[in-house]
Amino acid sequence: MELAAYTDAAGAAEIQAVFRGAVETEVATGWEERWREFHRPVRVGPLWIGPAWETPPQGAIAVVIEPARAFGTGGHPTTRLCLELLVELRSEFEAATVLDVGCGSGVLAVAASLLGYGTVCAIDVDPVAVEETRRNAAANRASVDASMADACAADLPFADVVVANIARDTIEALAPRMRCRLLVASGYLETDPPDLVGFRHLRRCGADGWAADLYAPAELPTLSRRSRV
Image (cartoon, rainbow, N blue to C red; front, side, top):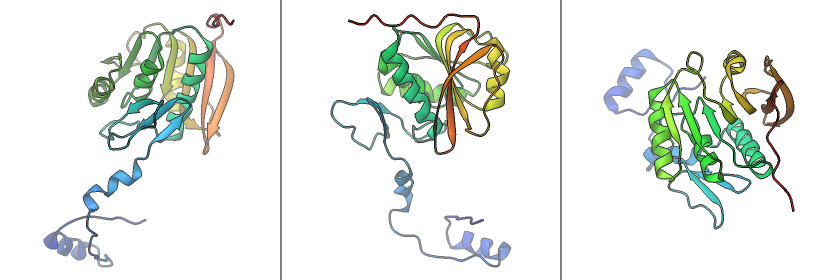
């Protein structure tokens, strides 16, 4: 394991006193901005998800997410997989309401709003996540109702599409309490699929060893398909 620390001369002396094998090197100019290199834009269908210092291409639906204190910049495979399913579902079905459970930065909720879904709600047990979701929604001029709630204890509102990009065991615990027509679930490895009570599996997509699954409640009809000419 390698641990890198930025410090001054006094701090370097303290580190050397504790870790005898520590190696000290000069830091190149511009180190304070180098973290930006890890946050690159991604494309998912018509969506472009990236930080404010990048320029989205012409014609893309831009979702600008500032890397901050809550999970979700668009770069993680589970986020991209959820976005892929949201893009796909939006093209197949009439305008639907969306609930983002465990919203983090709000990237999925903001994208759903900008894709043209109906009412979009987002909940998270972490007040920082709710704050970041509201900030990102405002920055993107997206209509998202974000609020703090413990999904494992609170009454979950009905939504046509629920998105849950969270831990597998949490999704399994929440499944019997979810009221929806479709569930987009992710946040786990392809080798560790969830076992959801009361849901039937429709399809799966994967990337880099991660997975996202589309489910429908066993006792509810699917959404009405858009009329085609």
